Length: 435
Image (cartoon, rainbow, N blue to C red):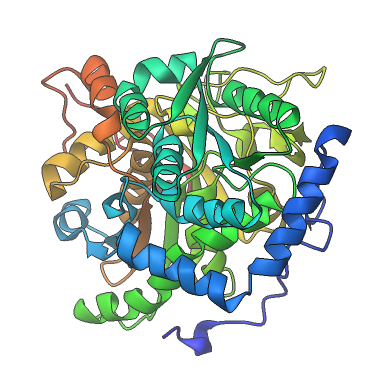
C-alpha cells in the first residue's frame, strides 16, 4: 500500500464541474454536438461510481487485457548508466500492445449502455485504433477509424491489424495528414452521425468530460505502481517506498496522466513529461506544445497549442506518430503552470538511440513514443545516486515502428553507454547516436 507518510494534503481537486483544470479544459464545441456532449457527461456521471460498471471494467482489465502489468527493474541499463535504478511499467505487455486498451474498454462499455451501435475513433501511431477495433469486435460494434495518410504509410502493420479486426480505416489527406487532421475528420463524422455514434477519443484532450474520463480509466496504471513499487524498491534495499521520479512521454498525454495522477499527492516524487523535440526545439520541426506553445483552443478544449502569430495551428514533426500532435491535454497544461509536473524534450535522434539501446540491453523493443521517455530516464539516471529510482511508463511495444526504425537507422546503428553530449537542465546528459 502507498506510504501515507510521504503524502501531503496537496490541494488538488481537478477538474471543476464545468471541466476546467484552472483556466484550461472546458467544452468548446459546435451547437450540433452540445446535446451529445451533455448526454455523455450524464452517462459518465451515472456510471463512473456504479458498482456493476466498475466490476465489469476491472473484470475486463484482468481477463481480457491481462492486468496488472508488471514493473520491471532494468538492472543492466541501471548499471551501465551508473546512477539511479530504472524501472519500467510494462504497458507494452497489455493485450494489443499498449496502454490504449485501458481507456477504450471503459468508453466502449459506455457506448453499449448509451445504445450507440457505431463507434468512431482517431489514431496516430495506430495503437488507439487497434485497441478500438479490438473492443468493437468483442462487443459487436461497428468501427470506423480515422488516420492521417502519412501515418497510414508509416504504421502499415497497425492499419492491417485494424482491418483484420473488422474496422474501416479512413485515410485523411488534408493538412499535414497526421493525428491532428484525423481528429478533425472524426469530429466532422460525429457531427453528421451524432444520434447513433459514440466517439472514443484516445487521449486526455477534447471537450469535457473526455480529459477527465480518459484520465480516470488510465489511472489504473499509476494505482498499480503505488502498490508494486514498495516491493520492487525493497528488493534493491532502497528505503524509499515510491520512486524519486516518474517519467512518461507526452503527446496528447494519456499514458503520462494515467501514471502521474495517482502520484500527484506524493510531492517528493518528481513528475516528468517528455515531449517530442523532433529535430530540435530551436526550430519548428517538433511537437513540444508545453515548452514552445501558448494557450489557445483546439479540438474542443483550451490548452497549450502550437500556433502562429495569427492563431493558426502550425505543422508538427516527430519520428513517432503518436507524439505528432500540436496540442496537449489540459490537465498537463495545469500541472505545468502550478509546477507539479515538469516537461522536457527529447529529439528524434535521442529517441532512436534509446530504442536501440533498450533492445540490445534489456531485450525489450519499445514503441518510439515510449523511447522518448526511456531516453530522458537514461539521461536523468546519470545525475542521481544508485539508491534513488526512476519509474518509466513504457507505454507501448515497438512492433509497429520496425519499418520506420529500419528506414532511418541502418543495420549498424547503436548507442554506446558512454555517449555524452552537451549539458541540459540540471547537468543531465543527452544520449547521442553513434554509427
